[in-house]
Image 1 (cartoon, rainbow over the protein chains, first blue to last red):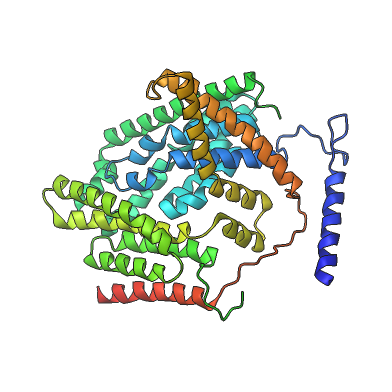
Image 2 (image 1 turned 90 degrees about the vertical axis):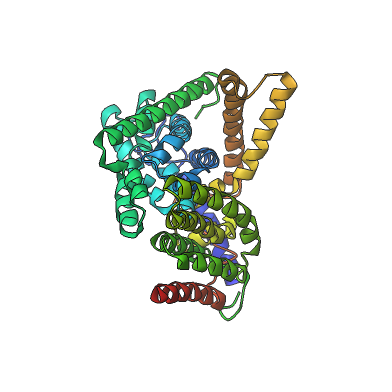
Length: 224
Length: 226
């Protein structure tokens, strides 16, 4: 009986809190906090959309466990650049709140831990990509901010994975050829070339994402 | 569920940690034949802890892709057997590491994270992201059927892919997201710091401890033998 009473009390408290946060007609929340501030509060519908778009990224990026073992420098970024920029950009353009990319990377990391743990560093990449985009554009109001964040997102994993391969494969791998291929053979030209290619692939994905999002916005699908 | 009981489902967080452990250990030991022994033992061991179905699902792709990549490595590095073994072990580690994760249902993982007081936004997002792929595959099938009905042409044509496949699919996802968020709100989910009750709690049982200690013991014994 006590547990039931406790649950009823909790429900009532929650209902009261929800009632307290109803925005007034002036566009301001009743406790005086402005609605259009830089760090806006996330709604359930934002989280749900970001989770769904993350599922799309995940399904299309399911080739990752195969790619991680191909001894070619930057193969993951080249193979997944399109998927990991197209869908996140759509997510950011729909939600348009700082942290949209971070949320997506957190949701996806729980799966990547099972597939390839170092890719969970996407969270860190998302923080950096968002910071750069938000510093330049001061928010996601401009569509190009989403494109910039989407373009930087996947290529930023290159330095992190470089460190990972150095730590794992140089310690354990006897097959020197494979190690050098993972690390770009120490060939600066190759490393720079592949990195530029990864950025280009991500940029194309981001542009496609932006075009799709704009089309859907025009069709009235992205109403907040 | 009491502590002194043997359940067929692993405690979600333990399953997650064991996945990371298997993968890291597999990558570290990849060049030795003992890694293959470990992976085989790990597969058999996982079958005793409710992962039989997941093992059954993972085995065919593991053999196929592991064999394929090992063969490529064998010829790519001048008929080097050790390179092929390393590659097969690495692929095997990835697939075996996926098994504990596959055997954990999305709702159990969410429940576990809620118990540990993770933010509601994260647990809700993870629940949706984990359980959405089957819905997504259904939607993809429907969009492709619609394409066929309209005689839209091949999906391999970029223009047709964009106009007749990608746009309708994303549009449909937006609709699903709106409906789902309404449904979630109706069920009382909130992102504010509201109190909530986890009705069916996840409990660590003896079987979970046997599992994790057994796995660690296996790793240590093989490392010592090496």
